[in-house]
Image (cartoon, rainbow, N blue to C red; front, side):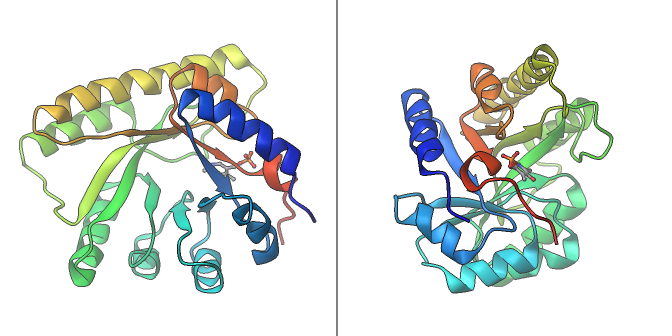
Length: 227
Ligand SMILES: *Cc1c(COP(=O)(O)O)cnc(C)c1O
């Protein structure tokens, strides 16, 4: 399968105007397919499965910035902590503690995004608005500290639907949570520059709502075949 270079160029142009970062989601795709985009200058790639990410990290150029965008189990943190550029799906304090622990072992501060649950799909993960508020307050009061974790922002997924108004409302709610968290954390000199929202089907809506990082797979690589 060849990557869709036309879509890639179109998307890159759309995102450049808005200063939005593109994470090319390469899960299930081959090393050869990834290299096709790499050769066009793409450096941010996203993967969902730990073993697949580790294999690709080993096989591919070391200047690739690997994003882990899947649901991360605590017992697998150790495999990606040494090299991962950004973990998007932090959905529990247990996971934060484990990343902190692995970061300490490696003497590395691991960049992460907190995942926020904004959709109506029950299969999705993340902190709800109230849990997020509690966590941010605890961080501000230094009631919890994760010195080896750098919280860089928020991530969320909208409901899987064709209802663009619903998607826009969900992304807008996440943008508001992001702005509030950003303002609060700034008072302790903690910056959270990243708001990761938007996939192939809804990235334009996400950008409209204020996303600055989109995760796009099928528009670039074609539809996925799950084994
Ligand atoms: C697979 C995946 C994407 C990309 O999905 P597409 O619809 O192929 O663009 C984005 N984000 C997450 C969390 C994913 O699991």
